[in-house]
Every structure is written in C-alpha cells, then in structure tokens.
Length: 195
Image (cartoon, rainbow, N blue to C red; front, side, top):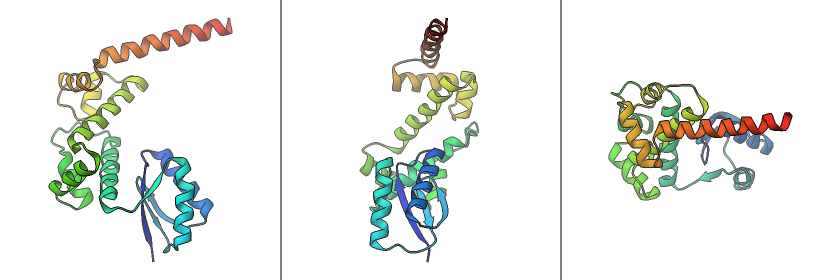
C-alpha cells in the first residue's frame, strides 16, 4: 500500500534532491517525488515516520499532518510550478482556475483556508512570488523588462513596475542598476586582488 507524505519547505529542484537523499538514508522506497509531496512504496510505521521527520527537519523540511496546512503547502507548490513554467505570457491564464484544477477544490475554499493559515490572500502571495521571479531574472538573466513582464504574466512593463515598486520601494530598472553597480565594485575588488 502506497503512502503519500506532504512535506513543508520544498521550493525547488535542489529541495527534491535533498529530500530524496534523506529518504534513501532512512531506507524507504520512493515511488514519486515532487515539490511538497512524496509517494512511498509502502505504509510507514510510527518509528519510520519519526525517523523521516528526524532526517528532514535539520534540512529545513517538515512533515505536514494538518489538512489545512497541507492544502496551503499544495497551493504554494502549485504556484511555484506555475511560475516555473515560464509561459505566463498568455494573459488569459487565471491562477484561480489553475489552482482549482490542480487541487480539485473550488477556489473559495482554497482561498479561505489559505488566508486563515497564512494571514494573507492567495493573490498577494502570488504577486510576491511573481515579483521574486522578476528579481531573479533581473539579477541572473539578460532578459529585458518587456520579456520579464511577459514571462511572469504582467499585462505590461508599467504594471510590472508599479507592482515591483509597491513591494520593494524600487523600480525594476533601479534594482537592476544597483545590481550592476555592485557587480562592478566586486569586479574591481577582484581585479585589485589579482593585480
């Protein structure tokens, strides 16, 4: 009989690898592993569950046993997966529809549980995560603001800039300029070291 565990704190591919290694160390057989969820080949005894909890916690992960917290983690994992798709340029995409489809619950229920557990709305959470993706691309890519706005599903550069400034207090171009200045200072410091 398969067992599905919900794991809090999984946000990227490296997290999947870390959890997989931790579970192998415990000796359980993983059938499927994705952000926030692991399917094991067999049922777990209480000592095995405790052992899994013990190996996950030092790495910043925790098992979710509360159904409301589990739903919130599923929402977060679904949002991250949607943002990782990088095809949000189709502005007809509605996160509410995608979450309903992914979680097989109506959006009002998902939203109410999320707000109750997290103390913020799903919409605010999604905007924050979209802007985190914008920051990532501003720092680590050569994409233009137009390309970033398109990929993160903002209707325009102006809309992106407005949301970005509201959250960070900076415009995206100022954020990128600050990053460029820091990079230049690092490069000069490095050149001074090797000279």
